[in-house]
Image 1 (tube, rainbow over the protein chains, first blue to last red):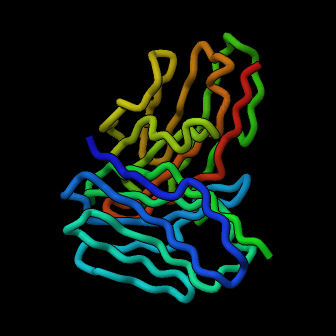
Image 2: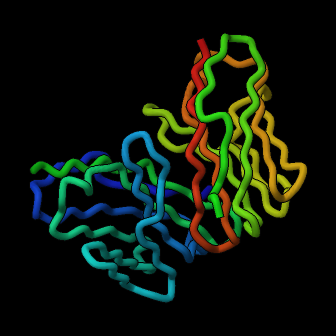
Amino acid sequence: GENVEQHPSTLSVQEGDSAVIKCTYSDSASNYFPWYKQELGKRPQLIIDIRSNVGEKKDQRIAVTLNKTAKHFSLHITETQPEDSAVYFCAASEGGFKTIFGAGTRLFVKA
Amino acid sequence: DAGVIQSPRHEVTEMGQEVTLRCKPISGHNSLFWYRQTMMRGLELLIYFNNNVPIDDSGMPEDRFSAKMPNASFSTLKIQPSEPRDSAVYFCASRVRGNEQFFGPGTRLTVL
């Protein structure tokens, strides 16, 4: 069945550095790729998403890239800040009903 | 809109008891999802509904778990009998097809 792999599981960066999280998916029919941020004790919330007809999308310090041929997509956070510390989940959906989540990346931003 | 509403927010029960978790999706959303989150297993999809119809319940761990969606504004997840290994945070989420999921605040379940 559909599978989404996410790496790394843990990422520690210095404040101001960039952070990159990578995901691969298996279902070539997937066409919607959201990224969620989950702070400690809170619910996952969407931070950015990308659809298969776009290769890159940017929102301030956050960007997502998609390579449909290779079936992988990445989250880039620039100029990281302590408040970026959280668990980040990638996900893939074929636009129907089911969304498959990655296992999550725990990001630590050291001040 | 108040977002996805879940109740209770916290539940502590004893092994063997029945537990019922409740969810009210965002009005107008036609898909509803139940997830379980633990440190060991991450975010697991248990079951999802589309237009109140269960589409895929392959994530339901065993027969002790059941879920219903009697109408577009209400869903329940029931565990009977509950076991300590069911302790987790249970999230409900809803969406319009093909778009982002909105998560509820979760129910933290502790089974003693």
